[in-house]
Length: 252
Image (cartoon, rainbow, N blue to C red; front, side):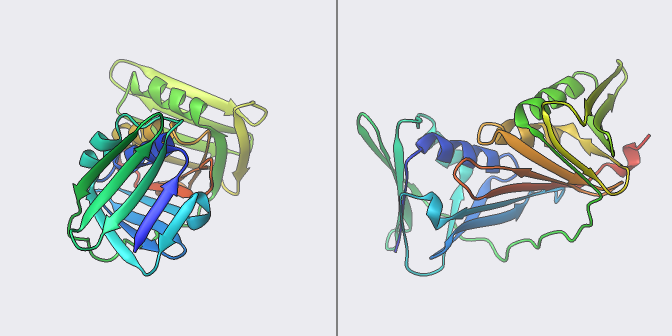
């Protein structure tokens, strides 16, 4: 039996949107401890790692490990009108294999959607040694990606002991965003070794844009020419993490 309830339907909607940035079909693993998901995008350039412990929910019932695979685009259509002042209840009908979604606010809306065949094993967590770690507001990070996107389709991240820098260079010009260690939007900077790596903005900007609706703080960890890890702090606990491979051939 699987049945859960959340007080903030909009948060649930926004998290599904953030996950759908990389994947169309999501296989959630529900257990008595909570819900997890780990999946790579079709091109195997990026990965999302999501975790919601049972403590996040107002009500949580899951008797045994259960895989729930859904089309995220279809789920988003059902959740499109979910508001902050609404709660959401989700249950799985074991007989029909349908997922029932109930939104409760000023009035009650009930939807059902057919689940899909669950995918295979979860992708493993990349084993990477990170030499640089920058913690900043998602608002500043999103604006920086917007600025970089005006001149290029990729951005270079650089970290030194005293500042975190984002550089974009394209045919029409360049953009450089510098966050000094004393900056009010740079909440933390730890650098064991000066690092730089270049990433595709088509991935990075979209990930940050989607995740910024659910989180106020982001942490980036990277090393020279290695994947970046992006952690977004969720307001009610849990984990939303992305890994993105670098564009080594774009290094200047």
